[in-house]
Length: 214
Image (cartoon, rainbow, N blue to C red; front, top):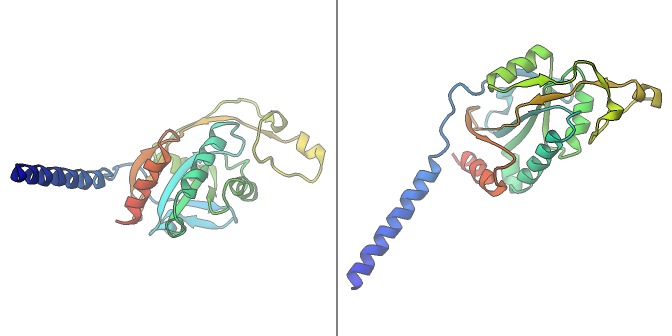
């Protein structure tokens, strides 16, 4: 009887070990998704994506006039980042790439991102640069409003600041639909997983930790 119990315990331990190994191998490189690119950071400085080599990156697309999806996504990313230890945060970068660089100037993007977490990275640039980044990650965006609409009519988390009320009243913008995928990228710049705000935060954190420890 004891021999049988010992055998069962060994099999159970072996099975658990096999499961752990398998779990650690569930983040394959997603070929054809991602790559190096040039952009502009929120200080107006040119930056290359390989500047973040050695960090685990979570990359998202959006824009500052997004009324619902982007604030919800950034709120999710704030909780995700907050669930990491201080040491893990230093090894991780949350990057938000605007799809509307014409409106999202570096200063405004910095203010918008900072509303959620000042450690987050905002990237803008020329429309050509943004379109290239979008294509690299097989993402999409589409302009919804043919005519620019007054931003006074858009529910915004962080409105752009103007010198006077008259300028604010004349401020117009476009609305877009866009990819809501969250790209999990390893320290070599390779995309390893596609996540969403529906992903349980604890599950996402474990994947980030796995890449940090690789």
